[in-house]
Length: 275
Image (cartoon, rainbow, N blue to C red; front, side, top):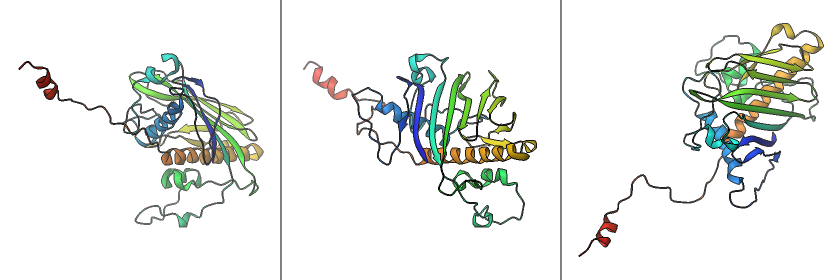
């Protein structure tokens, strides 16, 4: 589950610090102190997840949609500095899951007997099923995971994912940095700690805001290979938790009459006209 989150360079927050998420979380402060900005950050991610930009091959923030109208990148970035990255950090505590039997999950209206590789099943079943497991973990043990997504403006496109960091302190850390400036293509540099280099490729399925780690098969041998597989499974579990958390997040705004597009001044004109 998600225990806390943070935002970097969002509106008045250069660094919001770790904001705990408990069953009941209250944000208290003066007017214009940033309470709504915290909620708007989550709504911005949910909007980008549920209403992706048409034709986007890399995750892109949808700044204006049915959930929130944020303006442009300069309106939401701290200090109106377009060179700053916009960051979202999630702190998770994940418990091991048991394997879900494939025959218990319907794949289509007509059952097709087509074998599919285990690593890609979540692309077919969707995030909610999260068909990954941690077979080496103790049933009562939880793992702490930190995931960070950073976005930068990319004219003429919208703010695009530029950096992804996944840190599992007891297993390893992976950092993916997008290096293709000015092009809407996927080219990433990867950096790994406590894991073999080039263990994964970053893949972005169509109609999905969150990426997929494609494990290189030549990295699955030996003890390092077990850690690589565990790291990929944990990453997919964590991204599934974030996706589900955003999908279930809702915001109730103030009960105010929104400004009308047009106003009639006929009555005011009649009162002010001489008789």
